[in-house]
Length: 164
Length: 164
Image 1 (spheres, rainbow over the protein chains, first blue to last red):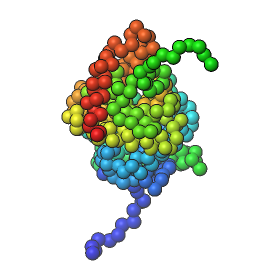
Image 2 (image 1 turned 180 degrees about the vertical axis):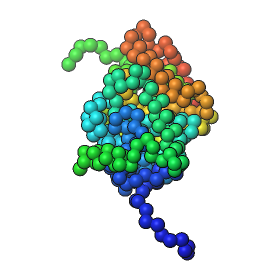
Image 3 (image 1 turned 90 degrees about the vertical axis):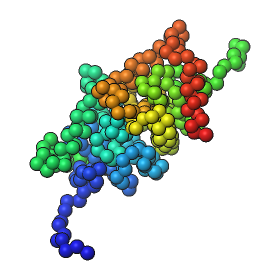
Image 4 (image 1 turned 30 degrees about the vertical axis):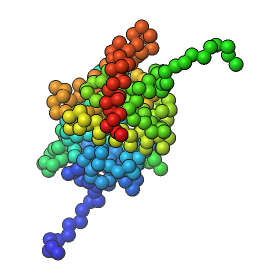
């Protein structure tokens, strides 16, 4: 219908309004994706999201709920020892009043070590700082200033082999 | 085998080392329970747990993972409007280094309102304070000083009717 020339693009996934490169995804199912982070709060801080753009947790089907959390469980059990951690924080900021800034359901999964934060809950402040930085992706000049695509792809590759 | 006289007890569920009265449970499935809190951080702050005592999230079967999160989703979608909230915080502190104090997987589900905490993440500090208070249950003299069983049963009854 359109005469606009087709532009060859890098394969991407949608994360709310953002494009996530396939190179940043380290594990996936037909319904969900596990991906590295623009700026991890702790080593191994990753996100698990439904493939379908869905704003709120209640927007997910039962199949999506089971799938995303089964994937998060698997990811957590592998990245925890890989990053020398002994615990995990799982959190969904489900809606703006809970601190959600990217309008797409996402589970934060963070490997935790004893004393990694002076106050345990500083980890959540850091998650919010990260969310603010995600907004900068919409500003093309600022896109990817925090970590380069290559850095993120390298970490995703490192994690991918853990699941093969 | 024992000659100890049988003592009639209130029906309870196990939450790690603690006994939870059935009167404090407002929704359940064959695998999971949703219950009110000893000291909610915000109105409607509830916990969703597997019936089976399991320390870590990775100890849950796929069936338990799907069940507990489907229950959490249903609980969240009902308590959010009931408490006049517009968002939800879901969190699992999975292991001691992540702030877990009760050795039994539990999902915190908190109805959130805009500006309910000056700093959004103070909510997590409050969760930890609550966890400290749970420890006092083991001290019989201090048991239930925060909320009475009647207060908790009344809130559970209020919530139970929302799901009928």
